[in-house]
Image (cartoon, rainbow over all chains, first blue to last red; front, side, top):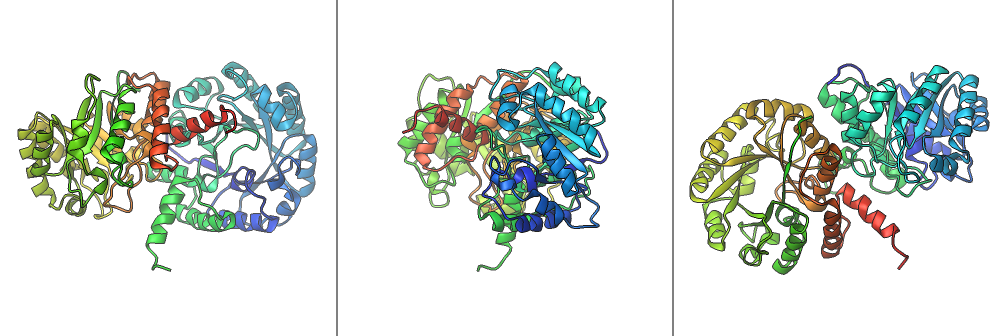
Length: 295
Length: 295
């Protein structure tokens, strides 16, 4: 197993909430402030997308305007196209996640463009923004095609990194596996980030296999919330608590305090009024509940 | 990663059901018959324990009397003491799981004996039955002690294997981790089986780490059911489907058909009238539901 620091970008306020009943910007800011206290250096806080397509992400500029200052966290916003990038820049965002897809079918549903058109748009966004991370959805498989060609994926990665962006491979529908990760990462190299979903309960084992392959950058979502509004096959994100718990045990530093994440779980449970899918969150909240006198 | 066959003992009809509202022996036999069609070579089907302490396991002799014949599966029954072993033998069981614990506090709650007394009883059972597997609960940690000494655990393993039994290490409250597994298995060697619980969502990553360490024998429970009636901290077992899905992907033969397991999930969902915790079960049942015309 490799050693050293692992970077976690918290995507709960964006991916985590995008399929939930919409929360007001002030509620999302309360979540962001609570998360900032956990020690994240990177957080995805908004998406500049159509409010009609993704109602839960409406009010992105208001969220960005209300972000806490002086917490030493890079605030990321997701954009699907140049219009979104311009809105993000106008709102004051410097760190831009650009969503493209390795799947033609998913790309058309998600951003209304084919893969090549969307990648060309991403290249233009990379030129326009201070810092870009291109997130390639369906990197390990898609419900709309028989298979994703890892060679074509590696070419996409090379194209974006050649233009100065970082790249994150997303397992949008939770179909990755340790074997598949090994095949894909052999072609892309371990400099990519991973954005894993837990549809089949394999997100954590995939993260572990990826750590063994040298990956040091992950997107996770507090409480294991999240999932694509554009696929029935999408489950929640890899839960931040589950990954931090594993990394703590392995002695890999993250800078993130697990007990504070559980504080956020309590807040989030109240905001959403439903149990969280994250397993460490569930176990730790149950422990806290048992430790309290009966109400 | 090692190669070759992995043995899975299905414990759903025993551990999986022991905390559920009791099912009749005929319902448990329907489950066992459906599981036998999946290809298991080992299945734990009953526990000869106090019906007062574990009402869901009442009627063990009736279950054993009704077991299907000619399916090539070894039928295991769990026993906590010599009385249970005698009842199991009288019912016709040849393959006996003996439950002991590495935790003094858990041992007293689970079998009403301290660790040493329970281990002496296990040694007597090993002499009396045709084949014994000693399952050591709380092998990786316990809610009742600060820590479990891996050296003492390794001595227990040596004692039982020296007497001719196989040994399975159980993570009763789901506190194992890849690091902890490495520490413990370095002392016990990889000939032990593992019985993992998923309290914190780490059962599958622990299984993967164990496979890398050479473990080839696992207890799992269909649908991820199960958990100890004697600890609030206990979550369900590692789901059979989740492990088989991982092993299929890794190319490790198990002899078990995943699609038939999903048939069992449908039956089990009907019997228990609640969603199953297993993640592959949930994803596959959702896929089947979407593939059907609306009711």
